[in-house]
Amino acid sequence: MSGWRCAGLTFRYPESSRPAVLDLSLEIPAGTTTAVLGPNGSGKSTLLRLLLRILPPSAGTVEFGGTPVARWGRDALARAVGVVPQGEESVFPISVRELVGMGRYPHLGAWRREGDADRRAVEEAMRRCDVADLAARPVPTLSGGERQRARVARALAQQAPTLALDEPTASLDVAHEMAIFELLRDLGHAGKTVLLVTHNLNLAARYADRLVLLDGGRVAAEGTPREVLTRETVERVYGWPVEIVPHPGPGPDTGAPQVVPLAGEQCVRMAHGEGRSHAA
Ligand code: ADP
Ligand code: MG
Image (tube, rainbow, N blue to C red; front, side):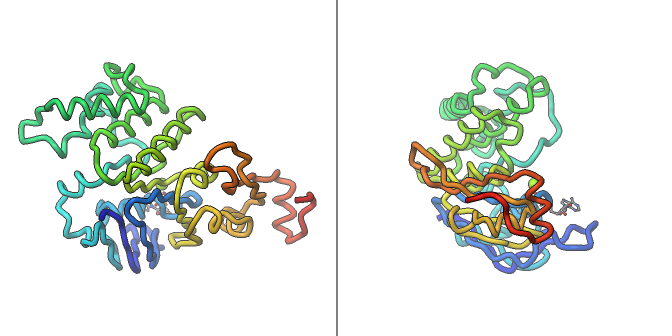
């Protein structure tokens, strides 16, 4: 099965004096949706690159599906995991249809000619990501959110059993962000393994089975949303006062922990170690 396991995983960029990921041991079980959280620069994207063998570990091991990732062929790994990298690679003046079609590359033969199954996969992915109407548009002319949806569609078109997405909803409006999280939930229910990096703690708490909270390249907390998103942990890792309230519902995620950041006034109190002024 297609989950990840890593042990003692460490990585230091050559230009940097301190490791971006440090002695990290983690299991991402197959068939689950896992969200990786953490402040800017805490090592989330680096962890993803290590899991996808884009970067070689400085120390430690990474296995995918029970096999060390170093032993996975690039093509085999590309067929097994659909990836949405953070930010954008250079934006070629291709159309949305062509970008999403690139998700089929690992499946195409030497001539890169699409068959019926490829075309169906592309159309389905564009529909689910709400970019079908944009199919003919050159990617550079899209808004940030439209481009992001097209990139998710490209990963979806691959129809891989596992998806790894680095901040897939960055710059999306609330409806499109919800649509992507609901889509990921549907894919999870259909048995896919989903690994996503996100800054949206509240949607992660509602839609992910497991959370991994990174801090300075280490795991600060991992487990269910209730286990990870406690006031103490969130305040310590992010350095900002918060209240945790249960999601009011309705819906299957009623009661999920939701993080409410408090005003800066309370932040000053927290910095001075004083008690909190408001009633819980
Ligand atoms: P996150 O995705 O959580 O914001 P990253 O994994 O991108 O964090 O970065 C972790 C740390 O590694 C940061 O301190 C960042 O500055 C550093 N880093 C990231 N990419 C590089 C790079 N190419 N060269 C040197 N340092 C890097
Ligand atoms: Mg990142």
